[in-house]
Length: 419
Image (cartoon, rainbow, N blue to C red):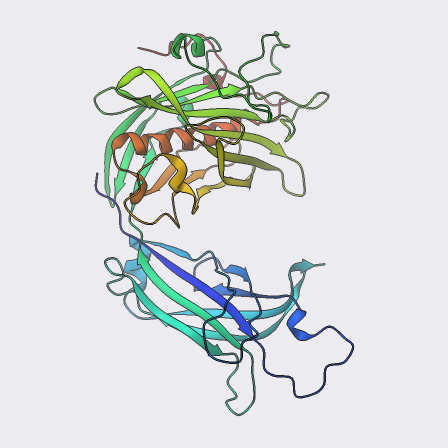
């Protein structure tokens, strides 16, 4: 498999140095104690926001404490579009608190700086565009605040996949390389509540700890008030199963409600073959999901890696967020602790790991999955992220209000799992 070219533009080592006070400080709060933040902008890209720590040193050495913005991810199309001439990265510095009150921005603009970024040849070599202090404002004769920042680019190649249909429709998964779509996986979805016992080996045990991860309850609940037994298996081109997403905790509404709550989320296990035997499987990750109440009706999720030692301390949380139920969003893993996942990495562990699109409730979903090259050493590694993406997408349906009906592919038990 050949990856697609991506570039990550990093904005880091952010810190603010205020000019020396010319008048004695009064009894009020010192300016250095006022909250500060910055907005990083590139035309036609969403802006990034970061808290700015205060630097008290009097020399020009790098700050002891700094912050980083989320940065910008450029695909091959964006690189081609922007590489004809230098682009401007603008950093605006504000004092006050982030956010809005009654529709009015809570920060006051202190000043801004600009950095010219040339994206020529950035796909093959890292480049540094700025490293040091820049003055806020354009009056050279007056003391002014200064901003420390590092702006650099680094190649960030990724494998890109797309489901040929909705995960519950047992689609083919294609690898995308420009205009080329090549099938690399096939999926088989099953909603039979009894399929789990037919598929998983008799000696399989599900991780169970004090946070409530459990297998299906033995008592029979009222029909229509639980969603359980969903499973999707990922096959390689030879027809061998290489990853599984299995719903291990039912999605059940809170008593007296029709909503899956944070206090009792549904859960999936993402499994990989244990050695060379396709009849033995090993947990790789756990995903729990629920319907979040609040100003925005959201699907919340938490993803943990399962380590070999198991037990209550065996899970490593690497992704937790909420996305809009109406608009959908992006499931992302952008973590520095992926080194504990059990996947070999050929480069330092940081930055982008995985991203997957999720459509809003009721919309046709064909997830696009991006995986960092350093996390794929074989086809089975990529299959784990495909299975995880399917589980996240299916969680949008599993968390649908129980007063609403699901599509038929998610409900019937007659479908045979193995053809």
